[in-house]
Length: 256
Length: 273
Image (cartoon, rainbow over all chains, first blue to last red; front, side, top):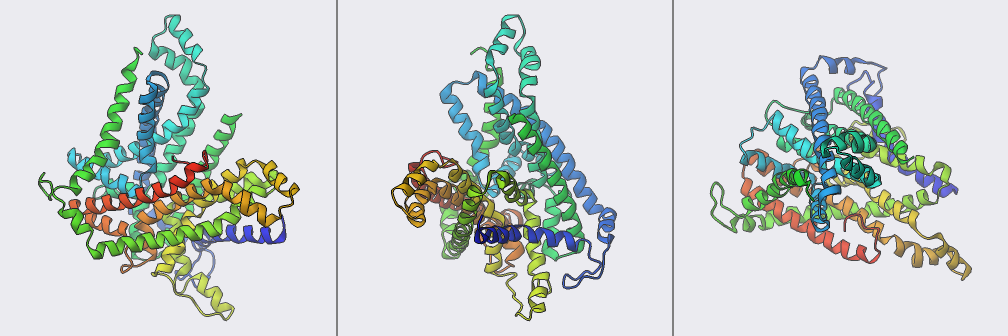
C-alpha cells in the first residue's frame, strides 16, 4: 500500500473508532465535564450497580434475549427443516421471500406493525409482547443460518433412517440434528446478539415499566449526557465484542 | 410429501406475524379512526405540505448522507480489495466491529464528542482553532447517518470488487489503458451492483431513522420517522401514523425499484433482488 492509501485507511478507521474510544475513556473520568480530565475513577461503574433502573433493564435485556433466542432457534430450525424437505419449489420461493421481508423492512415499520398486531390481538404490551416481538424478528436470521447447513446435509442418511423404520421425529433427532448443530448454535448466538442490540422494535412493543438497556439509554440520553451511560456503554460494547468473537470463531470453524 | 406437518405451523407463523401486521398498517391507513369505514382522509392529511416538507427533508438528508457514504466509502472499499491477503480479513473485521456496537451508543458517542464543552472542541481550542457547534443541527444528523451507515456502503462494494475478474484489468493494461481509463471503463462499471446495494442499505435506515435525529438533531429538525413515532407513541393517532408509514414505504419502494433496475443489469451483485 502506498502512503496515500495508508493515510486514507487510517483516517477512516480513526473516524470509526474515535467516538467509541472517547466513550470508553470518559467512562473512567473523575470529572463530570468532558472538557477536562480529572483523574481515573471507577465511580460511574459503581453507580451503575447501585442503580435499580439500570439493573432492571439489564435483567430484562438478558432474559428477553435468552428466551427469544431459544424460541427463535427452535421455531427457525423446524421451519428451515420444513422448507428444505417438504416444500414444493414455488411454495419455497414465496416462503423464502416472506421470510426475507422482515429482514428488509425498516425497523420502524416492523415495530409499529407488531405493536398494532399485539393491540389487535389484545395482548398487553409488556414482557410477553416484547418477548414475542424479539422471537419474531429473530426467526428469519436463524432460518438463514440453518438452511445452508441443511443444504450440505446428505439427505440419503435421513432416507436410510426412515427405511430402517425410524419415525421422522426420531430420524431428525438422531441423524439430522447432530449434523446441522453448528448452524443452529451460530443462529442462536446471532439471534441473541440481535436481541441484545435491538432498540427500535423493542421501543414500540414494550409496555410501561418494562425497559431494556437500549430503551433506557435512549431515555437517559435525551435528558442529557451523563458519565454513567458511558460506563454502561463500555460494558455493553465489551459484551457484544466478546459475543461477536465467539460467533466469528464458530463461523470460521463451521466453514472448515 | 406426506410429512407436511412441519410446513403448516410455519405458514401460520408467517401469516400471523409477517403478513397480517403489514396488512394492519394498511387497514389503519385507509380507515377512519375507531371504525372500519374506508377513507382516504388519512392519506390526504399525510400529503399536506407540512408533512411532505418533512418527508422531503428526510429524503434530502438521507440522500446526501448516502452520497457522502459513497464518496468516502468507495475508495476505502478499493483499498480493502487491493490490500495484501495477509491483512485483508483483519481490515474487514475492523470495519465490521463498530457495526455491532449498539446503534444508540454509536449515536450517543457523537453527542459526547460534539458537545459544546466536549473533547472535539477542547482539542480545537487547544490548537487555537475556533470551536464548532454543530450538535442539534442538520450537520450533526448527517454526520450521525454517515458514521452509522458507512460500513453498509463499504462492505457490498468491497465484496463485488473482490469477485471481479482481475484478468480484465490485465487485458486493459496490455492494450495500453492507463490506470484512470481502466478504472473508469472496467472497475467502476463492474462494481455498480455493489454500489447500488450499498446505497439501498444506507438510504433505507437513514430515511426511516428517528433516533439519530432525536439525539443529534434536537427538536426542531424532525424527520419522517420522528413524526410517525410521535403519532404512535405520544399522540395516539394510529390511522394518521399508519398513513404516514404507508407514504414512507412507498418512497422507499420507489427508490429501491429505481436502484434495482440498474443493479439487475450487473447480475449477481445486488443483494436483494
